[in-house]
Image 1 (cartoon, one colour):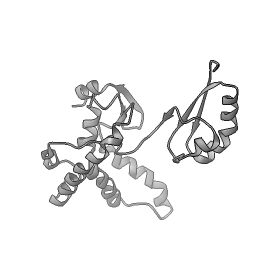
Image 2 (cartoon, one colour):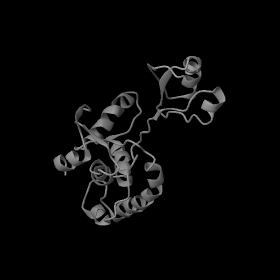
Image 3 (cartoon, rainbow, N blue to C red):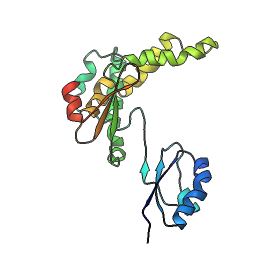
Image 4 (tube, rainbow, N blue to C red):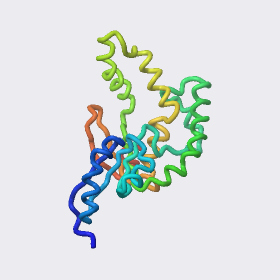
Length: 201
């Protein structure tokens, strides 16, 4: 019979970490002590769990800049004069990518809990990127302001923060939690999608 939960959580991101923690996990299993196995997804584990004789993860954290983004049906939004969508070519590119988002929906439907990091003043990401490049520029490397702008705009054309990401933050069907990020990177508040839609329409 399995004993009470040990209260132990083993958090692993890479295969190397799995190998290091494997003796502990095997001992807990030998003693029939329950524990949480949390995988952050840095490395795919493949068949490692079966090979080493340990249980599969209880939780898998999956994050990404376009994770959960879904196709927008009304494409007129791409012609509303939003930043990065400033030429016919850029608008068409955004529409083409938007159509491709449908291909990801079977994967998104496997997510049990969606937390959206929502930045209401998304233009601040240009400043954030510039700050990240400061050290590199001091070393004679790093991107210029114009290069940063084009770099960030490319991602905005692919999945726009004011279109697909905002829709996801407002989506009560597919999103469980919205974490609102302030301009200083701090967490401003945590909302439901309905609250986010009301407060950040």
